[in-house]
Image (cartoon, rainbow over all chains, first blue to last red; front, side, top):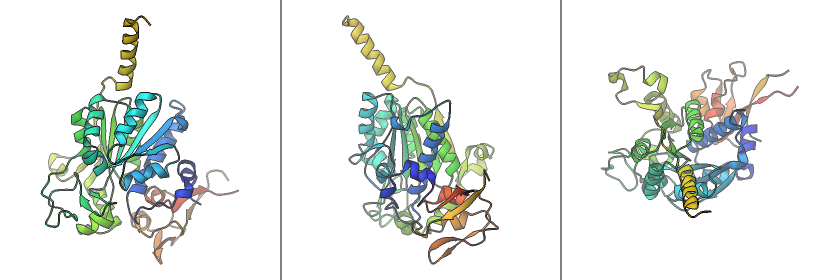
Amino acid sequence: MPSELIHKFMRIDHLPHIWCAGCGNGIIMRDVAVALQELIDDPEVNLNRGKVVVVSGIGCSSRAAGYMDFDSIHTTHGRAIAFATGIKIAHPELEVIVLTGDGDCSAIGGNHLIHAARRNIGLTVVTFNNDIYGMTGGQYSPTTPTGDMATTAPYGNIDRPFDIAQLAAGAGATFTARGSAYHTRETTELIRQGIMHKGFSLIDVYSVCPTYYGRKNHKGGAVEMLQWQKEHMIPAARYYAMSEEEKKGKLLVGTLTHTDFPEYTAEYAKLIERAQAKAGK
Amino acid sequence: MAGKRKLVLDPAWCKGCGICVAFCPRNALELVGEKAHLKDPNECVLCGQCEQRCPDYAVWLEDLEE
C-alpha cells in the first residue's frame, strides 16, 4: 500500500519492480513521477497526464515504461528514440518522454540519439546511466569508465567512456543536463525543466548498479555508491562557487546546455503549410 | 489536524538495501532482519529524504487521519 504518488503514477499491480535491491533506477523513476506531478499541479502549465507518453527501449532501465501508468510503449533495443520520434511527428501536442539506459541510448541507439538531437525534436530523454549492461549480465557499456571491470572486460576496459549529455549537446540538443540517483530534488527539477523545454532535452541521470558494476569494481553496495555521488557530484550552485582546483574529479549536477533553436515538429508543420500553399490547397 | 504527517514503512516492499538508513539525517532508521524499521520515532523530523531515495517505494510520508 505505497504512497499516493506511487498509486497515482505507477501500475501498482506490476510492483514491487524487478530491479535489484539498491538499484538506482527506482529512485530515478520516482523523480520522473514527481516532475510530472509538479507540472500537472502547476496552474501555468496544467499538464494533462493523458497527453504524456512514456517510451522505452531494452535493458533494466527500460522496464520503467511498463511500471509507469501512462500511455506507454516498450520498444526494441536502441529504438526508443526512433519510436518516440514517430509518435511526436504524428502528434506534436504530446509530451513524449523516453526512459532509456546508457547502452540502449548511446550504443545500440546511438545513431537515433545523435540525429534526434541534431533535429532538435521535442522529446525528453532521461537516461538511467548505470555504467554497465545490467540485464544481460554486466558487460561493459559506452559509459563504463576506462580501466573498470566488466564481464566482457576481465582485464579492465580500454575504451574511453561517453559523456552522454555532452554527446547530445555536441549533436545539437538544446537542453542537456546531468543528474544523479543521490540528488533527487535537483534531478527532479532538471527533468521538469527538460519536459518544459520545447526542443530536444536529455537528462543523463547517473544510476547505481550494485549488483554488477559495483561488485565487479569493488565499489561497495548501493549505500557506498550513492555516497560517492554525494561526494563527487556537485549541484550547480555549489559547483560554480568552487575553484578550478576544487572542481578536479568532481562532476556538475545541473544544466550543461540550454539554447534556442527551432523545434523539428514546428518546422515540419511550417513545411506542410508551404507545400500546401504552393500546391494551391 | 491539517498538515500532520507520519512516516510509514512497508516491509513487504522493502528489499533491505539500507539506503534510507544510511542517508537519514537523524539516524532514526535501522535495518532489522533486512527490513527498514523506524528505530526512534522521536528522532524522525519527517524530512522525507528516505522516501525520495527509497528505490522500492517502501517508505513514505502520509497525512495523519483525523
